[in-house]
Image (tube, rainbow over all chains, first blue to last red; front, side, top):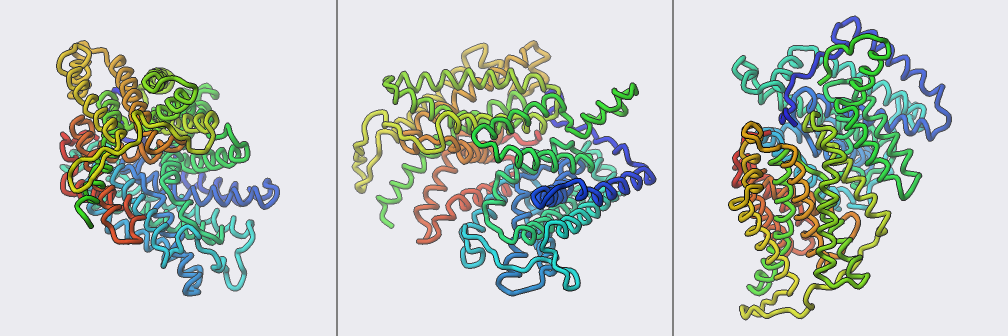
Amino acid sequence: MSDPGGRQAPPLSPDALPRTRTAWFIAGALVAAGLPLGLRGDYALHLAVAVGINTIVVLGLNLLMGYAGQVSLGQAAFVGVGAYASAILGAKLGASPWLGLLAGGALSAIIAAVVGVPLLRLRGHYLAMGTLGFGMIVHIVMVQWEGLTTGTTGISGFAPLSIAGYRLDSEIRMYYLVAASALLVLAMASNIINSRVGRALRAVHTSEAAAGTSGVDISRYKLQVFVISAALAGFAGSLYAHHAGYVNPDSFGFGYSIQLVVMVVIGGMASIWGAILGAGSVSLLAEYLRARQELSPMIFGCVLVAVMVFMPDGLWAGSSDFVSRLLGRKAQAEHS
Amino acid sequence: MTSSAVIQYLISGLTLGSIYGMIALGFALIYNATGIVNFAQGEFVTLGALIAISGSAWGLPMPAAVLAAVAAVTALAAALEWGTIRPARRASVITLIIITVGASILLRGAAMWLWGPDPLPMRPFSGENPISLGVAGATILPQHLWIMGTLLVTMVTLSLLGEKTQLGKALRATAVNREAARLVGIPAERMVRLSFALSGLLGSLAGAIVAPLSMGQYDMGIMLGLKGFAAAILGGMGSPPGAVLGGLLLGTLESLGAGLSPTGWSGYKDAIAFAIMLVVLMAKPTGLLGRGGKS
């Protein structure tokens, strides 16, 4: 609380050196490729796909929150726009699912570019409220514009993705598509962070005034990241639609927006590997508790509070601190 | 559209707005002491309503039931600060906000476990006979008067507290500048605790007085909390008069929007309220009475 803005610069990720980054990336790819061997049954794969989809959204949101320092409480709306773009194009026009995937990302990006110009003039909690309001409006439109979205009935009956006649209609096939996409997005996010844009973003996060005086075009960078995060959310939404085969406004409400922010913070802001950890742990915990009825929201709330109290910088920083201490080394570079 | 209908919408809008305003005051108090947005604010409202409902169902007289609910939630809010916010006080603002998100999920879960998922009714404080206003046949329910009156009493009490007492002055000083307040010896930690307790008090009071109109349900706090947050932002985060103004404005817009929109469009009433809020924010990015700047 002594630091109300929480404005220290996010540290360079421990994998900032290109060679280390590549090594981490290859390790991640190997784990992702081998994971299905360790997962039994379609249910586990189904969850893995869900985690992958959330990871893509969280990577984008993490760029926005952790690096550009801008909060969005309306990210679910962009996921929803992507999902509905795919569903409507597929079910009403019979368009190719790949077109839907493209349209989902593009439409979300366009909407973000339009609303981002006025919204990103807001700061701090005002921006949080602005994005929250935007998300609520989009959600209400999904429910009310029945001519386009069929309202709460939802949309089904659109084709799954297919590659050269090979339909991605089983969990395992979908898994590999989502895992590959998530890894690509991860590589892209990592490149952005370690590029000129990434340095500019960190500067904006540390001090907008200083960054501005040094010639960083603040509003342009903020808008770019906002658009990128929305495009990723829309793309993930399309993947979600084709995976589930059904979309419904319930999936894209305020609760999901909050859950996404929780994933970013639990994993660790300004840490792309934390994004996977955040998306994975929150999705799996929620799913595990869902079957346990009455007490589950209370347990979920307790776990969330406990993690944040004991690991205020998130699971990634928290666990890497723990490992370093275990190895007897001094915790490297403060993860504050 | 008759003028009587418009008056009726205004009355229900101002009633709803009074509730939003009280919730928004709670947001403002905690924001001023800590810089965080307390996402558990809506759950204070829920618990205030549900405890008051149970109290009166067990045969407590209405004032005692309301008092018990307010006392219990005030203590709970202080305990929440002690148990979750204080141990993490060195964490960043966003971490603290996520802690309040966790607390809200926890409290909502507890409310569902204790009271079940169905809405529970509560008797109005003083009957259900509408009072005629003598203008264009418009009427007002006694409970509406109770709600508007409570907001008025709350505002007067809070401003007296702020002007006349040492504690209130300390709280106001903290609101103006947390660092400077600490430097002149105002115990920051006690101010944080106090702000949580007061927010719990305001939230639960709002819940207890709105319950006869809206009924009480474990998840009622989600929407009420969001609207209270919207009202606080609309008025200017951290400004008590702004919080009340924002609440009344939001409630009125919502009610008029729902009432005056063409048939089949009333589902958009919340969208209208949020859209107007966004337009106001575009024109005035720090809210109507906000000092701005602080993130």
